[in-house]
Image 1 (cartoon, rainbow, N blue to C red):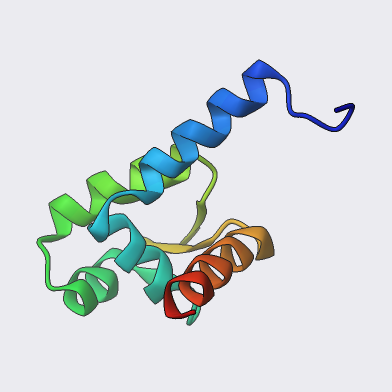
Image 2: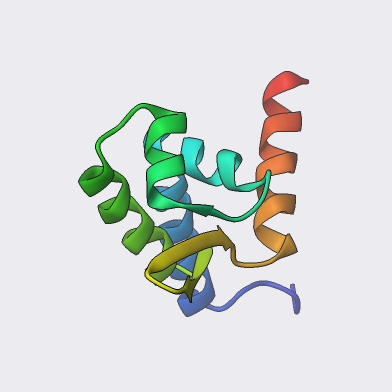
Length: 97
């Protein structure tokens, strides 16, 4: 029982699952597994308007699932770290099992 998460940690886990509970956000994350992309490339890949993708990217960034960097006038997005890829891979594997 000593390894149980705190109530605060449990709330954060719950919020993370809510973020991952959206089809569009999951598509974005899975696309970013392939590497860094700009909003235009992401929007084309998931067949959505750039403004809608930008809104979802902000939410993903706020929850530390993606991060961005500026290259000239272009903003490039990528998964925040390997943990995000691991979470997605485990969920996909569970679904396929």
